[in-house]
Image (cartoon, rainbow, N blue to C red; front, side):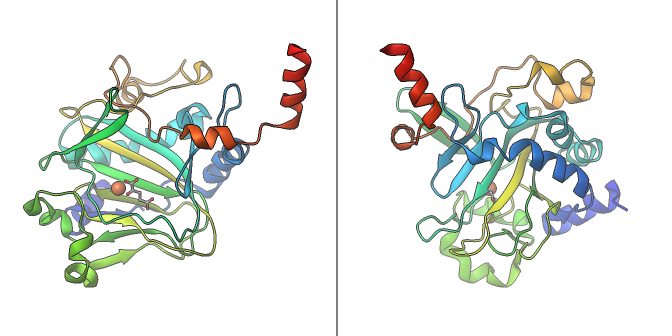
Length: 284
Ligand SMILES: O=C(O)CCC(=O)C(=O)O
Ligand SMILES: [Fe+2]
């Protein structure tokens, strides 16, 4: 059984805690049913789908696909755990469901996520500022069975990472290699929560299965709201005040949803045949 006190002790000590079992396999299967079609087609115009970025596909408007998804992001235990750890009320500052494909070309670096994300509308880039005393959690739940390419954390690094005043740590890998914990060979439903001041990355891999994950960053109330939260009106009627707090009701977003689609990718996207025929018939 999961309990708050021992989970807090574990994350205090190691910087992460395995909360697998919090969300049932049946719930994971429900979520997979809802996202399987959109994760198979690009998001464009009226077609709801994914945004491609490097070796990943990100589900556009992640929170609009079902109450089950909202319920994971606002799970009672998860929120109580995050609020106890952050010693503050928390809100969902970043969130996504994404699939990662094995790749020789893309590799995630060792990094921290205790930073403010904003979007520079003139330069059209995301800008990040590290905030060393920003304390909150990220959770990652696998939606697929994961053999390789799992999340990796550097045990205990939340206690010293802020000494370096930087967000990337590839240059120190040799020094912390004995403390790396890798969540490979884990079934769907595996649920890891970590202090986002813990050094971590997705393990690079260039063969094998696609990995699909659900990601949420829960930040203390003193930190900015974060990404826009777009919900379906179908799901709004009975959201509790706590859910509304976590989902930033009434708050202005302070950045955009990650990632922004690449227009070139859009141009090369195959428009479904039926739609092409329809366009021709409308404009002849
Ligand atoms: O996908 C992963 O394993 C890690 C993701 C991550 O660190 C991030 O998106 O900031
Ligand atoms: Fe990260």
